[in-house]
Amino acid sequence: MLKCIFNWSGGKDSSLALYHCLQNPDLDIKYLVTTINDAADRISMHGVRVELLIQQAESIGIPLYQIRLPEMPDMKTYDNVMRRHMKHFKSKGITHSIFGDIFLEDLKKYRDDRLAEVGMTGIYPLWKRDTGELINEFLTLGFGTVIACTQQHLEQLVGKEISPELIRSLPADVDVCGENGEFHTFAFKGPIFKKEIKYKLGGKVFKEYKTPENTTDVCASDPDKKLSGFWYQDLILA
Image 1: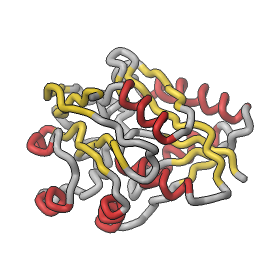
Image 2: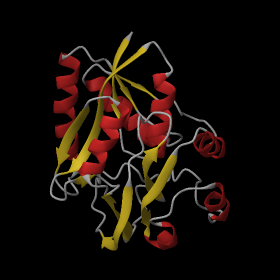
Image 3: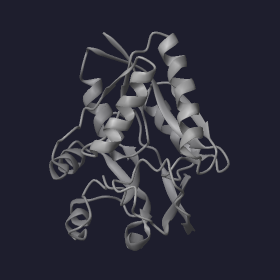
Image 4: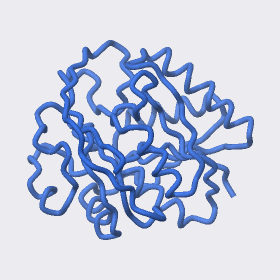
């Protein structure tokens, strides 16, 4: 049996990947690992409150391991923090790290290279699957997810729950799983959860970011693409 950590973002791809991993008797998942913006006390990139993340982990039944990062760390800082934590896991006999990535080759290579430095290996349950098939499977399984943040031009989506109707309404250049960083989600129900996480909508804010060189925004497929900002929907524990 492989001792693993699962890189948990709180969103739909993580949820579906974890669902498949829990069906595999060869995988022993010790922790859900989530990077946290320490200044905001929210999930990095997604902007979801930590109290909602904690509710997810408790409902799933796997211990949560938080990696605290400064807001918008440079690549050197990010790599150093992550390397320290991966070495800690390796010292505990954990050999594999699981991700919900689907098709971003550069991102997968980056992850695999960093893991190899500490003697660990990546596992990618959803790799190279068709994103249309994945979102249909996600919804058919009974998962529920709400869009927590979007790129600037997709403001109309933020705060909406994903449904077949919403997927059909997406612009043609938007991946239905948001794999290019178009949007990020918070999963609140489904077969991996013992109970639904109840939430309500708070305020909606726009945050503009300068895109530094060597950015750690590993959600963007094109590192040269300068995005002016993101819309965030605050989700509050109900």
